[in-house]
Image (cartoon, rainbow, N blue to C red; front, side, top):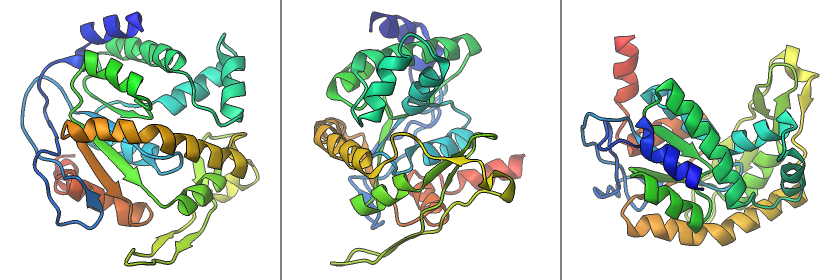
Amino acid sequence: MARVLRVARSSSLFGLGSRFYSTSAEVSHASPFLHGGGASRVLAKDRNVQWVFLGCPGVGKGTYASRLSTLLGVPHIATGDLVREELASSGPLSRQLSEIVNQGKLVSDEIIVNLLSKRLEAGEAKGESGFILDGFPRTMRQAEILGDVTDIDLVVNLKLPEEVLVDKCLGRRTCNQCGKGFNVAHINLKGENGKPTISMDPLLPPPQCMSKLITRADDTEEVVKARLRIYNETSQPLEEYYRSKGKLMEFDLPGGIPESWPRLLEALRLDDYEEKQSAAA
């Protein structure tokens, strides 16, 4: 952990101010998909956004964090990817991580902090500025470590009903040749008690990838439900921690990417930013 503190304090990722500093201090209740606030813009000079994406496994943190990373020109750092890279590397942590992941358990703070430390060092060497964290922090201890070394501008908490999350996780597939991810689940959850219907079309692979699809070893119904249960048990204090600081924005996904992406941009007050970037290209 000392290494993370040392790297973070010296890194350009942890400068003061922000180009797009976003907080839930200005609350907008206009959207039915928001709970706890929208995002306000404050222009500054020294760095890019420093955001965190929270949400249950399978909710789509990586998808939306990656899109925002591209839109805003900041690195998307996903601890899940860091874990999978370590698993594939046959490094010293590989066997230990394999046992933890296959049992649906949370990876320890020490391991996650170690992996994040290495990623921050690599980013520092490349002169990266700002970040969108995906999957970190997951515990109060991790949040406190992060809070000691940097200012987090905004924490976006993505939400979906549990039955949708289970179906999404079980539908995940990866092409073992090109490495791209797909989802074969077709979701149509009828709305009840005033809640809207949630419909998501499958994200099917092209013909050349169809015969090369593989399923993650930890994407079984038993393991998925165990991960969701553990996440729900540990996420409450974390959400309350950021809510008390006025930095938590809860966002109920209304459907798949076509429905959710424009709504998320609107909630982040970035709905015109994509158009401006396209016009400038």
